[in-house]
Image (cartoon, rainbow, N blue to C red; front, side, top):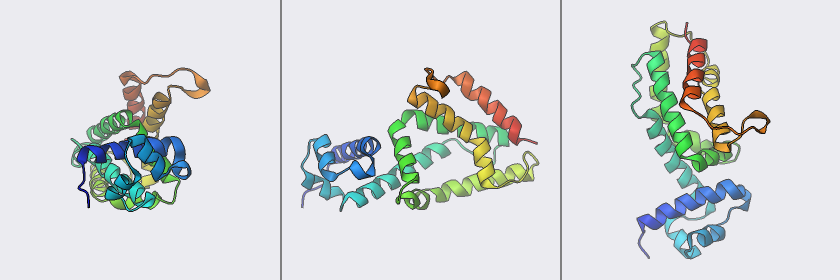
Length: 196
């Protein structure tokens, strides 16, 4: 049995995500991936049992990496404004630096692989975010609310701005480039909407 080559393994992950984004799950194949990586199909089977194993492993690894980035510098004991601001910084940076990964996760959300995202990395993330929310409620900074309401108000505006930026177009097709001023103007509106 041949040994694993870390550089080759990283190339395979990068090309797999790119192909999955451009081809979709149905159009993706191990043969196409091997060709894109300029390796033999047999080499892929050193790393993965099959196409499903590849997708699941990559989703798990990328979701753990994303979780780590989102929690970087985040303190669940921080004030609501400071904690939310750190989350915005982390999420914006991750989404803008990892465009293909973000698109890959969007595809996963509407696929049979969906549960992989939630099972693999959210445990520590959920614990810290829950503590952050409980602290903010206990300090009287925000009202209690369902997590879905919180997420929709707290992060959907940021995700939409970054999506416009990554697509290079806004509503109506106008050219769009996201600026820091736009991010923090939107953040202030979100903060005002959530705080008591």
